Image (tube, rainbow, N blue to C red):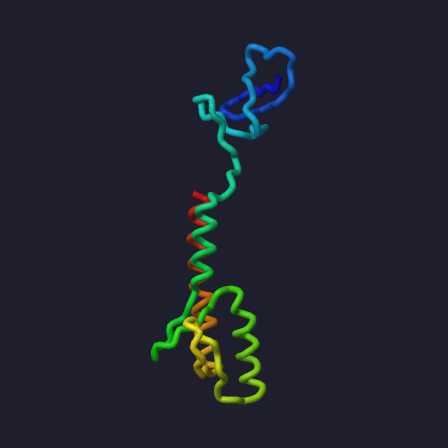
Length: 141
């Protein structure tokens, strides 16, 4: 029988016995050294994984990142769009082209300048930082 010994409210030892000693408790599956004894027959993981809902909320928010230009154009600024935006900025700067066509969030094709793309990239990164900070605050609470 798998048993555990609690000292100062924390699982200090886990062992296998044929018969559980009096001062030892039956060990629930998955509970190990370092787990916290909640005092009600349950144990808490000292390093719980972030809740799937926090991860899902983070991922959904990151997948919906967009930048609204003042003229009504909306460009996606998701993490996976960053490389394309950076490459386009570099292309426009190297070729000294004033603008290029870009597929917007609504799938329309609109002209964008390097300044437009840089503004979108900067805004997208700032919004992503806010999302990540909210996620970290939630999972470390």
